[in-house]
Length: 295
Image 1 (cartoon, helix red, strand yellow):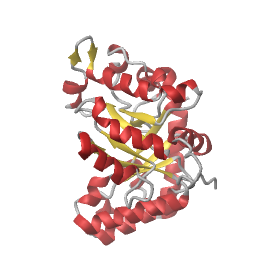
Image 2 (cartoon, rainbow, N blue to C red; image 1 turned 90 degrees about the horizontal axis):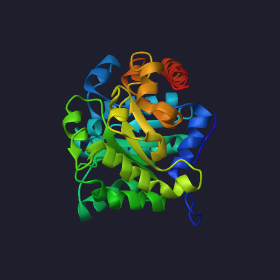
Image 3 (tube, rainbow, N blue to C red; image 1 turned 135 degrees about the vertical axis):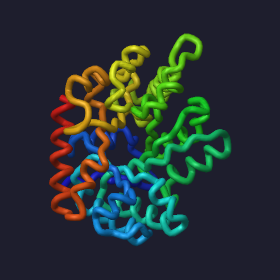
């Protein structure tokens, strides 16, 4: 089992998130397993919809796939709905993920301005913060520039962010495909990430500012004039694998940027629980399917 340290070493410049993720994908393949303790999944596992049930679900998932996949992605909402006790479980889950050496993407989709965005950034991207993760998801729809506090703290702490760009929900297109001036809103978001990753691009490394791109958005990437390869960041992509986009669709969406894709799955793996052996086997199969589809 290959371990990658996920905590910056005091006194040493932190290794950028993009470089750490690239190494993890090389070692384990391009899969990110969601930790989504949805009430229906808890029921399927025979667990109560309580903080104790969440804890059992999440820690069992980490035990099964930690050290075997490139990344884990806890969905904050399913913990937040249980209030303070649920947040305490999320803190424990993030700490457990760090212990396995597996990178963690905390799915919080935060977006705000000024000191409020700084507060969110400090909550999730500061060394030693109870909820700190290797990376988080953020929403740029108050303007890409509003993300500056998170982008700056991620860079200084060796962490990353994944910026929502082209999502596969049907409501997304009304905002993301809308044209502002000469370009679509999503194209402006990708341009922002491209600029944020410029230093890493110059050094020949994968940048730490990633994008969320649904694998099933079809020809939107090419139609909107978006260059994902030039963005040079990791591409968090739901909808890849046995039930999702196949090789043809992935070529249409990602083209030559396929090697930067981190395929995200949750229910596809979690439905195999609660058996640790079955969860691990399903995650390894999903990794193989994603790697094959993205070749």
